[in-house]
Length: 561
Image 1: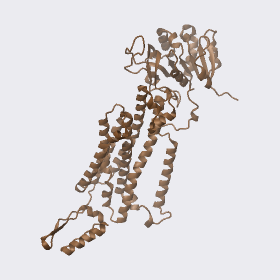
Image 2 (image 1 turned 30 degrees about the horizontal axis):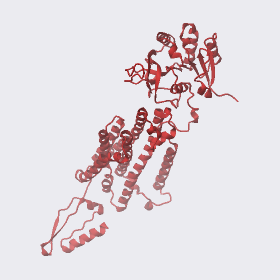
Image 3 (image 1 turned 90 degrees about the horizontal axis):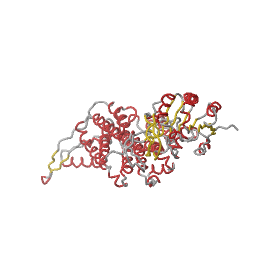
Image 4 (image 1 turned 30 degrees about the vertical axis):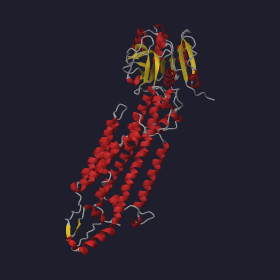
């Protein structure tokens, strides 16, 4: 049977025993000692296509091994990987390392500080393969040699700005922000550095990642890479889209039905431009409504540690502004009559509110977030109920108005359902990957991560380390922020639809003046028609005497029933 394990070469003094157990599980190890004449060069010539070379002693940087250095550099430039680790950082002097980096590798990396401090994984880091981050710790304490002049893309772990030494001897003195683990491109290959003198497990995981041994083969991963990542959700949407298209075609071409018996009037959906555009705006408003109403309380629960009731009360500005704006627009529409301006303003507010939510972070105040939700609520209130009274003026028959009411309900309920479905997939997949990158290397299982995302009590929340909690909350906030792309996109689509509407005024029935009817006992009965009666098929009953008034009232009573 053919051995498919990759080959790893080790250059050292003597025989390296520690730190190889997990590497040997996935690779074939071949060692060469500097003490044997030309042994490293010979080993490299025997395995020119080795996956990686781990150089754990710095003898190669001396003038004696100048030829070996040239061969190793050529190996890297042609696509190989070299990792400087183990005892390399403590066995070489700063001048020798700096000269070797400059003359042999032509790199700006320079010997930096020797400190004990917490190093943090850098999100800007670049790796050799798609899943190279699997199993890497988000942060850990390391004692070792750091490098200067390392680019952000080449820096895997670094001491962040404002770091202090954790040395028990010198105390918490400020230290520089430098790189403890580096991995950068050289030609077609890679050069790595680990300065950890104790070679902790977190550092060993980084070494295996550089070798490509921290994960299975890429084809073994069963989830789709990217933002979505939940196959069942995607499959559901594909089926839903198929059935919707099938239904539309069936209705449009009268398959198995007649024009009179179709569920949706064709003039309501397909032939009237205004009805179609208002339906799109209503659907987009509903989508924004669903995402905001659901994920704002989740943000407050995770970021500020609020219980469900306290988190829900942070929606009061949203609810209040939403209701007030609905009533205000209902009062202004008969007066202003130009409906396009309402849809344009409401869509613009949705667009602005969705954009503001893209600034969501762990440092944002509660008042700012409640201000963002109020902007979205104002846009929702303008659009939410506007489609029905606007489109009613274009539909003369009661049957068409019933179809319109059905379309409006479909837009509102369908928009909310679509929003929550898409947001759920984005939240779960993005949140899982962010938490995996942040705390996955600290001993937490995938199950614990999914429990945290679903709101179940998770071992991650029980961790006493505040650093773990900060990383977890930051990852969840990033996932929630990704969900608010939905209001932003919905606002954009709604604005385009609103801008495409005709600039025209609605023709409402003008209210008649009050009519005074004299009856016995000098009593008066007053009756006033209002614009609301327009929805009762333009009912127009009038009487000049007491009998005419009674007939009019009876007709109104019957029609309202």
